[in-house]
Image (cartoon, rainbow, N blue to C red):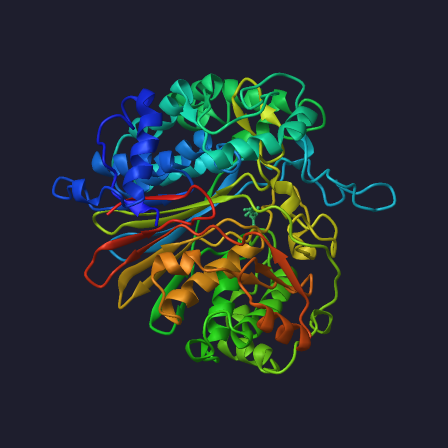
Length: 574
Ligand code: DON
């Protein structure tokens, strides 16, 4: 269980030369081997769970220095942009769902936008066929980044420490270097060819002899970019030198202009709020589909006795798949950027609508997806984004899911800026009915329009129980995000698992199209497999589904961090 205390107060914020040592210490602490030496008395109660031990340590150090969950979130976001370059980012976007200790809840949408010059047919050839790869690789796949504005807005409204303190750890990590984990070294090696294909210059992530665990990477250009953000706020990214660097990096076919960058604004939005049994659920509103889809799934689940059915039994997998195929069909049809077309949120969350939609679920056999709505697509591919969850000593909470979309985004590296650009344009429906890289199909609501936000599945979520903070969670995983969050909640609430068990347990997934249950290796035994096939399901095995990072507040007020063992994720705090 990767959970524990942050043992060394020194260094994370003030001297990043100790970073590698810190990683060892954190792993040691988090693996629970050193529990006797963990002194709680002088420690600040709080929990930070993220995809990378360095980033979690940075967040907890900020809490120890008197920062709140929002200062820590800003610090973690920037730290991930350094140590977790495949998904951590400054040139991507994301969503934050938060709950203040007063009980006030809200969300911040810092999702990327289509550039001004974007138009609905930009990825189609003369025959209106989709030009493969154009929306997911290279300069034309880049959406106008939202992360830096989002972090500045979040900090301005809710942070208590100076912004400089929140961004400094990332600057130090970039300037002094950080050590690669085995998984990150492998991931960088896997993408070397694509890095070379997208860029014609040398940059710090290239290594012809291959990266190995423990290798150190320094990103001096990124340190300078982060310094500019520290000194000039928005102007350090959306204008001046950094803006020029971004536009230079897309000199070939990119369409993002200085005006696109200077216009970008993140948006405070009302959350989707619903209930599941005794729990209040606070989740992300459109342009993420996550909140509406999660609420539809949870509401639909209230008509079934999951506790009796048991975890990952034939019956429970079948019912989840049937609920999910209906929800994802709605997602494809009705969801998109609410600033462009009204989203029928009330209708989609209406209990009579949901009950009616699920009334024809048979416990004996499947409802083929093409009877729900037409469409044919391929399998789900890569899963890279990142999520972190933070609770501070006052129980302020925040869940942030942030992404470049694919691993290392568009693969376009800003040479003089030291960072990758996103490939978020692929989340638009590039042509109605044609699936994106996650196999998701979309319709008019998610068509490309100048200045529009692309539909997302990101599902940062907070649960309350009896009016108190209960759970903070989220995950990467493209289309599987929504169902991974859903199952994590069911695992705790219905199947009586601890938070860590709920995260560790194998996940299953259905997304309407393709008409198949995707399951994580080991999730379904062969007898259940045969029975599901007999009922009419097609089954597809994948190695991993989800990478949930979460915090749960126990009845006695103690915080439990749950870090996903599928990655290097780490919970730091207590
Ligand atoms: O916003 C979305 O739904 C996607 N861009 C998220 C991508 C993702 O989760 C990739 N995998 N982990």
